[in-house]
Image (tube, rainbow, N blue to C red; front, side, top):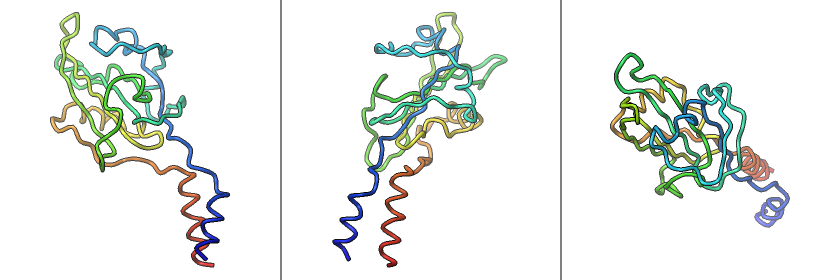
Amino acid sequence: MIVLLLISGLFLPAASPAMCYQCASELALINWSRYGLPPMQGDSMMADDACLDDSSLSGHVPCSAPCMTINITAVGGKHDGRVIGIVRDCQTYFRSPKALPEGTDRICRHSVRDTVRNHRINVTFCYCNGHLCNGMAPQVQLRRLAQRRHPRLPNASMPCRALSLKLAMVAVWLLI
């Protein structure tokens, strides 16, 4: 029976690498250096304000590192808490961590900064492991996250379909 399971596992499709959404809002790209974001390493993104809305996300890239979201929110004034820019990508193009701590699916780091024009912003770098995990948080949750002092988010990773198929096949073989 075990030999049969091992042989049948060879014919199942392998789990593909995780995918990350890849997009950037117009204000994030236009004001990149003003927001004090790290230099982009050879990649150029097209501005797309659909990046601000999780339900409109479409562009994605394969990624063997954590997915990343850079969320820029206004601090103070009439736009306090408003998301003014967002970037989503595979982390390998930007900054650390190259991998998340063991047992962690999502971490965030916050930094309140003054822009070149003396506006205060909160830049939140979030990293996650999981298929398209950098696009599941609604804007309300991103705003709350930007204002939180504790950088951890609950686990919200999505399972990979290929892996789910393998597990289903193993369950069927066990029943036979």
